[in-house]
Length: 392
Image 1 (spheres, rainbow, N blue to C red):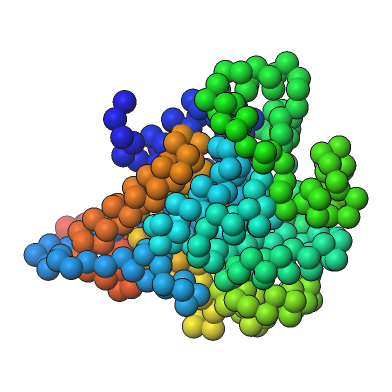
Image 2: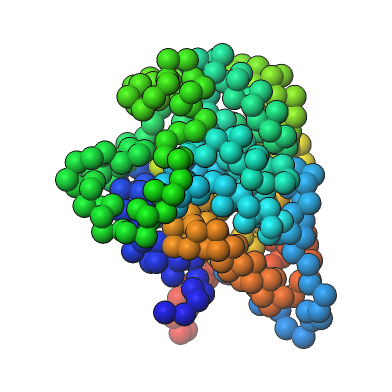
């Protein structure tokens, strides 16, 4: 088969290469997966305005996100278990993002640790923080991110409790995989994945094992993580984390204008409009559908980014037109990683870049920073004809 031309083609190849439990983890949503599906479907409903006979030369996708120059306004989203899509996955994805000139965000629940990624990259990356009940461990994570030179902290707000994902429960998801007949079969039928996993020592949650109190091995990890997500997380904790961090702070998981205004009041540098990829509250609206009202609610008081449902450069353009200053891709880069490793992440980014560039040109713009609502096609309302008057 030839080189993949779309994110969907990368997804199909990842499905054939990654064990089912880990592919399903990346490709699942909560409960009915209605919100997960809406994230994609609602992008398709937005139409672009085609322009002709305009100068399309010397185009630029370069922009900024929280003051950092990016080759295009796209970042790699924080995703748990990235190192189970491909051996050393977080390191490979971070290297691909660095070479491409876009931010990489490392998850708290990564397989490769903060220190692992820092040792294998040359530029600062971003670190995503989950708030645990053990505040000493949280402070330690923040200190480790500072020591590694991370240039931004992404604080996730919408995982105080874990949404139910049926596929993960049925698959008995764990890292590393359990040794049941089902799991052994899944791994055995993916020999290239299995071989690569034997070449690395990174098979569990690198930011937790050996760092959290009482978690020195895999036997103690499962119970610790099940107990540690803090349902009491509140706005006062954001202030404490901001003080502990002292650097650029991004708040992820905003889906409501009132929450957006409160987030802006914290003094954070940006918010991410996100429903956790449809993995938390099923039945919530898509990220793109609430973006305009959140942008309107906060005005210029805080930078607004968007995560969820982006599968093409056209999706990126639509989000920018509706007011986002930056976007995030999670599943697209995971599909690339699972399919081809580091090269696949670069493929995913290149697919997005080419589509974004061509779309911008055909909409009549040469600079991505000029994307706005004028590039969207607004359908006129259908006006029903008045009934004919009876003849006199």
